[in-house]
Amino acid sequence: MTTTLVTNIGSLVTNDPALGDGSPLGLIENAALVIDGDEIAWVGEAAAAPAADAAFDAKGRAVIPGFVDSHSHLVFAGDRTAEFNARMSGRSYSAGGIRTTVAATRAASDAALEANLLRHLDEARRQGTTTFETKSGYGLTVEDEARALRIAAAHTEEVTYLGAHIVSPDYAEDPAGYVDLVTGEMLAACAPYARWVDVFCEKGAFDGDQARTILTAGAAAGLIPRVHANQLSYGPGVQLAVELEAASADHCTHLTDADVDALAQAAGTTVATLLPGAEFSTRAQWPDARRLIDAGATVALSTDCNPGSSYTSSMPFCIALAVRDMRMTPDEALWSATAGGARALRRADVGVVTRGARADLALLEAPSHVHLAYRPGVPLVSAVWQRGVRAA
Image (cartoon, rainbow, N blue to C red):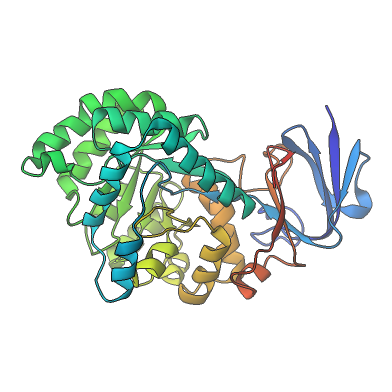
């Protein structure tokens, strides 16, 4: 198997505090690393690097772990430009706009849905994302939810069953009947393709009791819970996520002190995943990352890429938003977009650059990771390795 030495790295982010400067980022200056197959075989100072079969000269630029995007909705069809335009002209966002995408997705062919998924994955990869989670939720029938997950599962191991995105329009007068479908026939058809089960616990979607029923049924089928929690209003989502030991509570925009305390107490189990693209695209209140971090919660950043409320696949953009508007430091934002996302997916092999980790890397056209926030909107990712293979 061919080994590759990546050398002359000006600044290497490892996310291993046992390395380099001892910070959470484990920064190593004048660094090098060795890729062996799809794994990292060695990390350290360039002067001590071992020999390898091939070499890549980073020319003093920064290298970071590939981004881990732990929350996206990429199996969809259609476009909601008109909705965005209206919202930017003064109309507020609500959960109901999802129905527009449901109609378009149901009408699309499998080939069209997969082509759209692949287009967005390539877009994200070119911006440094090497691990991504994606969900169903735009079909809301047994057949359409299962096919969405089947398509997603061909391209990532991090697949989430979100039959409980909203109550299907077909069950508008019978929400209880839809919960029965989501926890019964639909779950049975979807569970073989998924690792996770999710629910949009929000006014206009599912209340706390309905969400508990859905997540408990999913867990009984072998799926791990995660929750769309407290995005549009205060509600039971965060507390439910902690109670059920969900891997993540996502959005976390409207939090009480009790919610923050619960996430801090559950920091080793339930990650607070913040999705600033949604607040940017809906002109909503920003999540208070500073409050969560200072309380001791584990925080992840993700894109929430979807056609309605956050149509961005750019993790660097989300980092810039988090630093500017959510009171995160550049170090915290990068950690949350890499190691934090890995925690939200309960993964130890991604989001880090350490021996034995998956060789997922991004080379920045900059001397430091701080430039991701310092130079917002500039395409700084100049090379990407995914599973040890140069992918962009």
